[in-house]
Length: 274
Image: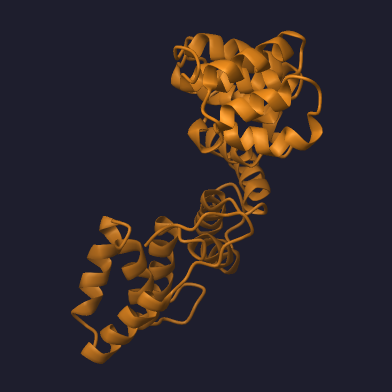
């Protein structure tokens, strides 16, 4: 639940510039892109004071990041609240993170849950995954395995790779949902195919043990190798243990497959580097 994943003013500017044509916004955008943050803030602040939701969010992010002003989480949170109260999803998500991590305010798991839920109900992917985690561990709400799976599914269906893995693991273990190894393999594979090292490790385990797939040491070795390249210790250990029972030519074939493997990424998704 790291707000830095979304907390880019440039992304906000590019996403909303087409619908913000009133005086000040475009000037603020131009100043920001020229890295003249002080001028950018002078343009966005009056708009934020007048109640423009997007400008309020941007001013909050500038205080959050310390761009054009001294970094101040408390002031950032106040601007996020103004935008969040108007339904701005990213501000709502950022407030959820700040309440969880005690940034600019006292830690409050109930408030954190509330803001994540507001954004999640609007389809905000990171907030949907966050709610899944909160229902899993019972933070800010009572633990509820079924609701956790429901929120993981919403995010997973929008290609959130961590949610895909979480949902797959729940199917595998029967947590909050009826155990279904075929569904487990399907969701874990979707995550692994995006390059998620933990999912790659789980795929290796499925092929090693023949769960929902035909047992295949070369396929298992390949997935372990991919995860190990991202410093997954368990995968490296599992790969090395398998190597003791495999033929040299099979190991070579598995390593070649890993070397030639490329993530199958959804649109606008950045690849995980191996």
